[in-house]
Length: 299
Length: 309
Image 1 (cartoon, each protein chain N blue to C red):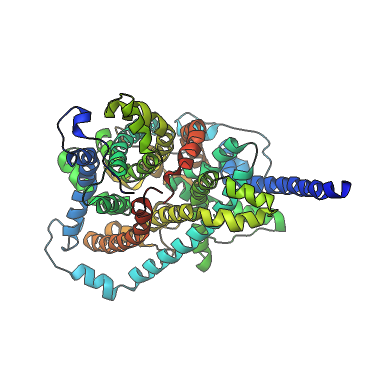
Image 2: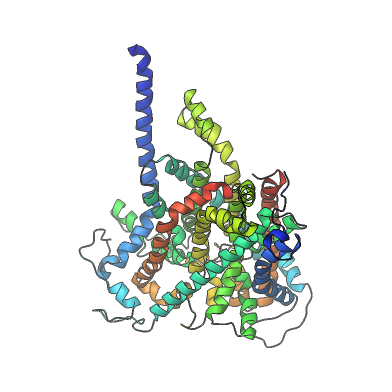
């Protein structure tokens, strides 16, 4: 009897050790990938002499929030270094959040409509139209920047939040359409038909049955749309000119000169920009996985 | 199975024919893309046939001269194009390998997935231009993190000009792009692995297959559609690579890290030859279109060709 059981025991032991080994490798890769992020966050609260020290100092002897004071224009012990008080960070933060919020919302609404049309209807030129949506994604912001600037200047949309929102909706629609189409296709049409037999109207079947099922998908789509808007640079740098509409990424570019001599401002700005994104992703990462797992991205 | 329209106008309660409804649903998306992307692209198409420049007030129609010059007299354009293709190929393959490893390990992990996933996604959350600044700082010759690590390990100062030396510059921009792109690959592939049916794996378990055998014989073949999709999306992103490289090296020194879009930017804005830049972006966009068409044609067939998949 014992002889028969032992192979199973040793099998189980191998499984357990390989699980452990796998977890160690996983944590090692993830932490290695996280290292640059960790270094940015740590540097943003370090003392200046230790950042530039030669030979390098690895273990901080103390912490300082001077880099954040620099960003917010507050006086630092060594005096401001050219940035002091001149950067309206609060404006940039507000613009970035407002623009990302409205663009992502509209892009998802439009993408949901388009995705539904692609997934549930047969119509002429469907494949070509879908391909057309995808081709738009192949055009980078840098190719659009100057002609869009000229167009917006004529229409009075330059340097306005509305101009930025319109631009970002257009940038996001192809990807949101593509994802939403996949999510709708992963929901069997029979569900809607059943709801209709039970007396639901087609419209209420869509709102009450289909839409709730795509919520994880919408969460996943929201993450990608939000991050695109939050981080876009090439178009923001030509459309926005003043703190009235300027977002974080082009604002960062304004003090490039200072970065070369003092990288603390860059690290502090990185951390500030990371916070909303991390909160957002941490909140919806489960739905993101659920949404993506439902089969939307397959094929 | 062909997709049948399930929504008819009567059921919706207002009079729309079945052909009009999908078009109505698609209209907002089409309109906004025509306005923001279509019009500007037409305008720059027109400009690419002129000698328009930001510094001169007038411009004339010069036909195909800009295109001819690029195609036949500009070796930098071809070099940048080749470099972009190499950049794309290397980055997308490394990202796939690392992303696949992370995805499989993450899918196996029993605990801490949410935490690991959030940490793992952080590179995706940074603005590309911030990633550019960060890596420019890490690879700085005097005070960079990498040279500092070498200093501590070897006990003597190293001032390796990572961003400037011949192959190193290209490798550093590649590393930055890979660091930024791998999480996306990992997330998509993990979702793919989690959505695979359990039965084949249970059967393999009974037959005593090892973890590696299961990965090789079951996971990998079934994951192919996801791998294809993730690679298609990342390739397109990489073909548009601009922000990171522009901040780290600006394409220099001596065009050693010049990719197609940093070169467009240099021509159009740096050397005030906007029309030439527009012509070059058109050539590149046409190439990208061909590439996109090739990638998505297969995906589309999988989508609607053989029923829902």
